[in-house]
Length: 341
Image 1 (cartoon, rainbow, N blue to C red):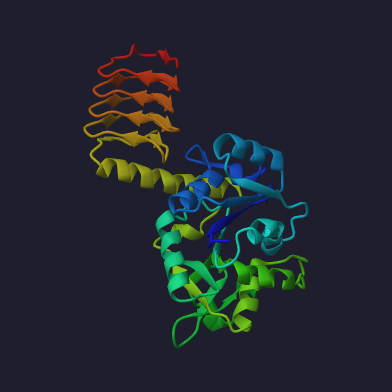
Image 2: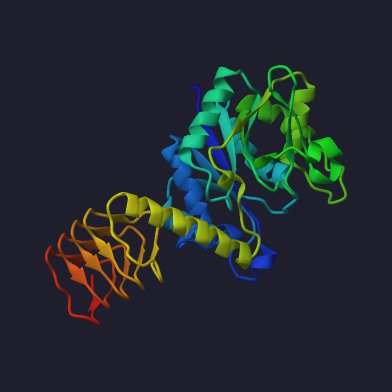
């Protein structure tokens, strides 16, 4: 069997504090479910063998995957007993992809881990001969996160210490565990059955697999992500709002730097997969989502909403609503109109 790298995405969580009747991983950031952000990053990093571990309202997740990512495998975690237990649910998937391959474990509710960081971590993982490589992040305030403790000599990973177990000098460390890991697949399968639920919560933690590997003499490493956002997730709607604000600011900055005029950002929300041509002007109250493509020299807004539309160059859309439609170049749509597919 040839070497094969794969990904396991943990998406079984309920997200009780969200108070929504949906799995937490389907909560949207800029109109796009957090799970899809993670799937896109894995795909852009070259990982096409992906298993999503479902749990709470698994039918919703499976329906979403069937419609949007039909090549992705899903497995059901019947009892949600921690991150290690979730990876155990994917053991059969991993066995079919072992023999020299590597496995990336990701959280389905951490949307900002980018493909570049995933590729960089894999490079370090393989070049250093690591059994496990944690993707870490450096935070101004690391409160609540597990700290990355490195060995004094080569800087390899010595341990991940949870905050409640950390000594004062360990609490001062600002490098934290993002919750994403590269493992040698064979090594991961070796230690998974040995993880114990000997904690107050009675759960199996994936960080225990890291500890078992290091204690057995295998090498661990930590790759620092380029952005602190790699560690960010959302447990309630307030934190989800924060993720939306971060993503919105990043998208608007990227689009303006590409030559798009947004004279006032009030009410302007643009999704991460939207493209806008040069010499365009986006006016207040404009919402662009889905796979919308705007040609060069257009004026969009004010108060225009487009979802997965294609707009030809030099068009003017003011107070217009459209979904799934194509607009010819140099179109001046009548204000307050609805564009049909």
